[in-house]
Length: 72
Image (cartoon, rainbow, N blue to C red):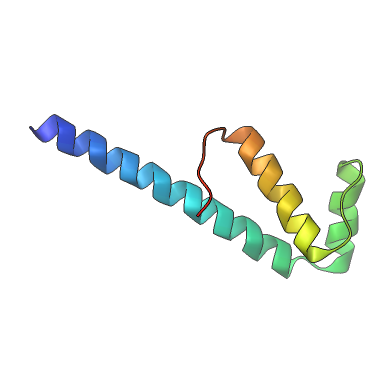
């Protein structure tokens, strides 16, 4: 059935998009300067200071906007 193949293909693509978004979030956090982090911190109350905590925070926000996404 071509329809089933198309649906499976779309599901696979959506999983890849979620994984790519997670990687993109980590790359963005790793490349932001201290100044940019302070600007971002001003937009969110209790924005974490350590890089590991910042990645976790942004992943949490990503989970909020994309419920049900699986971690890679």
